[in-house]
Length: 603
Image (cartoon, rainbow, N blue to C red):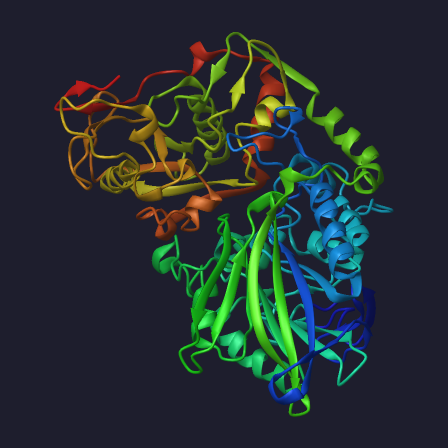
């Protein structure tokens, strides 16, 4: 099936507030208008409706953590999942009237939990007589009207995404996801929903979907030569006027892009990664933007458009279904048309409600299958290992990741021109709560060490580049003067750097002096016990996220690729444990890096 014309272009779909056509013509459904007295005795017709929004659901249906095999919980006691969102949505529809509401999403839907992984890889929806994706089942049952594409929609390849799209009763929107050859939309750019009022013209709501241009880098293996992803601002500037010319009274953008106007990839990205704020500022004619991608909570944020001075209301609900955004619109009928009189936004918390039994019952069998899958025993471990101290100490559990990666790359390069080069490896702590127990080890234990669908690559670096890489990684630590108290809780995440952007590198030894300023912290870098030769060549076993520019680490994104694997690192680790049968820390654990101050170890 061609990439540039899909079933929602020119085909009606009954959803949420009624009939709609993605990409163009719209039909409608009833709603309610009110006449409100104005000065001088005249009456103005007014209409109110609510647009609900989620984002970054990442495969969460149940309030369940498949890595801990228990109900989800965090320090803030958030809850997750579409079953909770469904209860909130039902309450809003009951309060506002279902026909006075719309429900949209801002992307990153089909990746992130073992539930999502299972139906992409273990029992894939693309198989012969394959199942319907749990996220499609849940979102169809709840009654979504539209969803923007997220970058993680492409992680499992275009065939899985296309099958998911086919299974959804609502359009997946991506105005800046273009066919690489024709440069025509590979997905519907927009949908127009029509809300009927008993007086005046029906209210036409245009919903424009925008995704992240970083897909071209992050999922290069899946999209290169097939799709291209121009900037959000330029595509919004193209389609917002089109929606207005088609009679849209209200224009909402669902953008899988943060608000900050920054990118975490430096010059690796051809367009700004977090561009939602720039879209609001630069493109006139937008009333509200549902923001995604950044995993932050923004109840309401107003940005004045530079051309019109009009305020655009932005909101980002917290990830995984922890929050639901509510955009409340007030419209007035004036001069033969509807005009937006007011827009406000807020978020509601999913931990205030119970799960919708209709949704949990619908997917109970799928949930049970995945729970059984992740609890399969695949080996044993001689000792317990924890990632709790991994952000500031060299611990065996991170050594395990690096050991498996380095061993895999060595085997892959055997017999090649680079087989004799030393192999280093990078790894980061994704979850401080991750751990391997003593005794029996399950799939979920190992999978919990690597919660992302990253794949493995081999890149060629010099000793000097390795040193630069380590120095950049050391920016993660808060500068702490000699003699000052060291609080592990306050030592890391300097300047907001997340744990997953602090890499440790195995195969070399080094010290990080946290008393020194950024750029001069890494000292005594050694290979084989000798000071590292800055001209020497090394192979770095590195995940595809980092290799494609993730975190903007120096050199690696522009280095020569010697080898790449299409299988997830998580699966490589699971297969390694199955093959070995036992995890023995004495075979790989060593202290290769330490934090110091003026030469004295911090811990």
